[in-house]
Length: 310
Image (cartoon, rainbow, N blue to C red; front, top):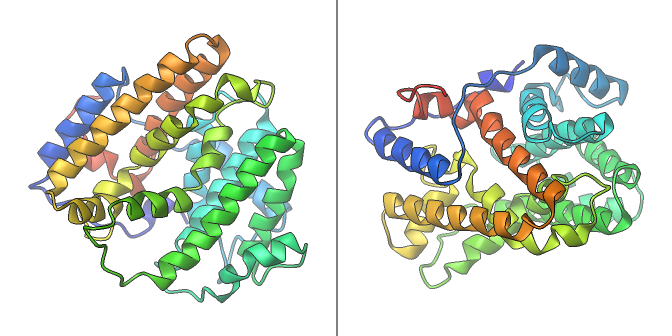
C-alpha cells in the first residue's frame, strides 16, 4: 500500500490562492523552482526488500509498508547528493519508521511502549513492538555512517522525538496560551527529528566545523518548509501559531515564510566559504522541494495545480 493512498484532508479552495502565492514567493526568493516529481518504483522495490531482509514489519498490525513512499522520496530526492548508498538507505528506513511512530497517536494506537522506548534503548533491552525494535536497530547502526559526535546529536534528537510523542499524547486537548508563544517552538523542536535530518545533509567526510554554526537556521528551514502546516485543520503548527499570537493564519503563514527565507540566506552566507558544504545544502534544498512534490500527503499538486511546472 502506498502512502499516496492514505487518507488526506481537502484544502479549502478559498485559501488556495493565498497559499499558492506564498509558496511561489518563497521559492522565488530562495532561488528554487517547483517541479512535478514521482516515486522511483525501482528504488521503492529495493527499499521494501531491504526492510524485509532486516525483519521490519511489512504486513499486519505493525506494518510500515504504507509509509515506504515517504522514505523513498526522502532518500531519492532530499538526500540524493549523498555518495554512500548505505546512508541513503538508512535515511529512507529511518524516515519510514519514525513517520509510522509519529502517526501512532493519530491512528489511536496504544502508546504504552513508546513511553518506555528511551529506557529500553539505553539499557539495550528489546522494545515493546516490532516498529520500535526497528527504530532501535536503526539508531544503533549510525555508528557505521557518521562520527561519534554526529551520532550523539542524532541519537539525542531521536530520543527527544520519542519523548515528544508522549508529551503530545499527554497534552493533546490542551489549549495553547497566548502568554506562552515560545512553547510551540519548544514542542516543535522536540518533535521534528530536525537535528538528525540536518546533520545527515552533510556527508560524513565534511568537518562539522564547516556547517555547525548554521544549525539554528537549518532547523528553521527544515521545520518550516513542511507543508503539513497548511493542510487546513486547526491542530497543525500554523493554526496553533496563529492562535497563540492572536493573528490570522494568513499573517502567521507570511511570518513563517519571512523567517524561513531569512534563515535560508543566513545559511548561504555562512556556508559560502566552504564550497562542498554550500553545494551540499543547495542540492538538499532543491531535493527537499521535490520530496514534498512527490507525495500526496503534502498536497503540493493541489496547492500548486495552476502553476506550470518549470
